[in-house]
Amino acid sequence: MTRPSEIKPREGEQRGTTYDDYVIGDTLPPLHFSVTPEIMQEYAGVVDGDAAGYEVDGRRAALPSVLQVYFMAVLYSKYPPQQGGVMGSNQFRFFEPIWADESIDIVGTGRIEKKFVKRDKRYVSFSADFKDKNGRMIAQALNVSHFPE
Image (cartoon, rainbow, N blue to C red):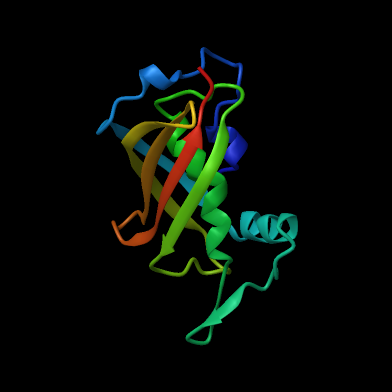
């Protein structure tokens, strides 16, 4: 079982990444973590979701958004967080269910997609893929965040 706080550095623990530090096209190293039924239950409680998840082909699947709590850890594995960052948008695509009654080992990888300035604010966009240990795509995500200078 891997809690997000175990793999995601806290703001201020080390020098935060500035806008200029991000490199377009840079790949993010693999981030390995395990999601257990216990974490799925805790997550459902925090987001006021149904702890039973939902039914897929007669089986119970966890809320797919449980992976969202690991999303920024993929970025922070190479680019430590800077205080004051604000998420502008997140997009998720889900491909395979995460079964509510079993643990799953996940590998998250990512890439810096683009940087841009809008209304005098600096934005960075990165993508992440979440696959199981056999390489099966579970989810993909795209984030745009504003980071202070």
